[in-house]
Image 1: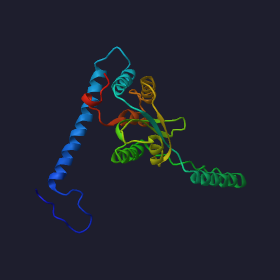
Image 2 (image 1 turned 180 degrees about the vertical axis):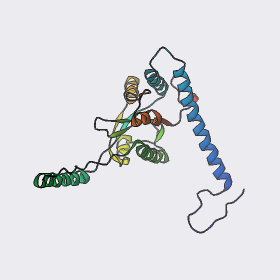
Image 3 (image 1 turned 90 degrees about the vertical axis):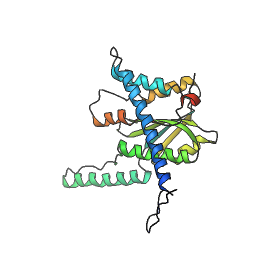
Length: 231
């Protein structure tokens, strides 16, 4: 085994060069599997010329995801903290008074919005924590906007046998805003949830924010046909 020499400063992330290469090989393998899944879905869609491509794309996702078991539906919503909203309201009241007293046209303050890339980065850390605790086996993640342009992360979970009181745990671990976790009772319920999740995907979109929704959905965990496939 080739040992990496230690040095002052930040400790080595890997114990040896062999460990680093093995982790890189595993990461590359996972990335290639995800890439193949996306290409397979795209090829299936492109082969269908008689249907709208957006509907075909949604249907392909629903068909694939619905073949696997999931037992919880989670929504994480970005929301400002109460103290931030109170301060924002106070600042805007002062601006309003200045505009009235001095005949000004000062702009009102608004809440800072987090972009989809930042939300995805946070969601990955959130899922990583659940994985470290061995609470989940797989997940399907998609992002959407509400009428106020605030972002949500919708997640389907297949929990592990160690996941006791998963609703409380999953909600408490989401620290970015507010969250809601509900149990999936039946296959019909699961199918409805998947259809609901893909409703904002639009392959003909021109806005960058809409295109990001198409590019940012993903799957994580065990999607092994032999072990977890529903016949």
